[in-house]
Image (cartoon, rainbow, N blue to C red; front, side, top):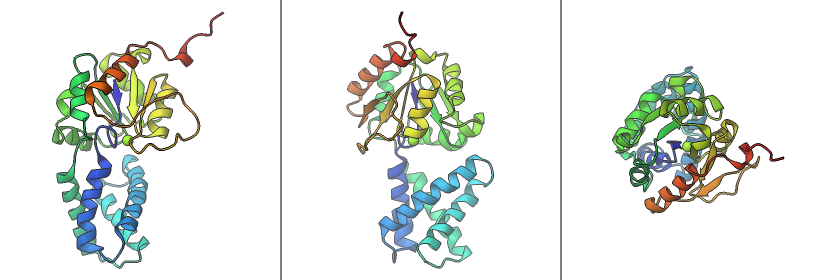
Length: 244
Ligand SMILES: [Mg+2]
């Protein structure tokens, strides 16, 4: 069983929001929180690409991100305040980190029946630390981070690395994640059954891929039973040879 981490088993959105609320109250209360958060999400994604490519260190990326957020809001910020903002965010985020509701119970249900790998576009140490802090590490057999293996979702190669690490084949694997582009398109390209974790019940993006859909990780027993049925269902229909 393959899982994405950020915003699938780990509630990045809520953790970031909690950290951002503290920063907003202390340093940017003249701007609306929604605007502050919207710019933060945008520049976080922009700088994350630079970090994963090894072009910018994590701490520098965080400072640069807040420089851009403040500039976008038309707020003046000096270098010392930038450092303070970046530190406040980091401290807030580290203590606000939470697993998605039901994640630990789901993994506990799956563990006797399936090997579990995380496939994540992020830094290895950052993700290992998250798993431990959130009490998920003991349920995970392999953590495959793009920074460590040099290839990112949706490239099918990263899914194959994860399958190799847990000794599984594509036809007996399922990938669950929240990103249509990284997780669902990637699983499809790798020939793995996909489950879209879609807690906000968004419409399906294009292009269309075959994927089951889950809106919540609770109740864990029910979600685990559904995932185990898919794991035992054999090859995806689209992988089967045409019958003569
Ligand atoms: Mg994700």
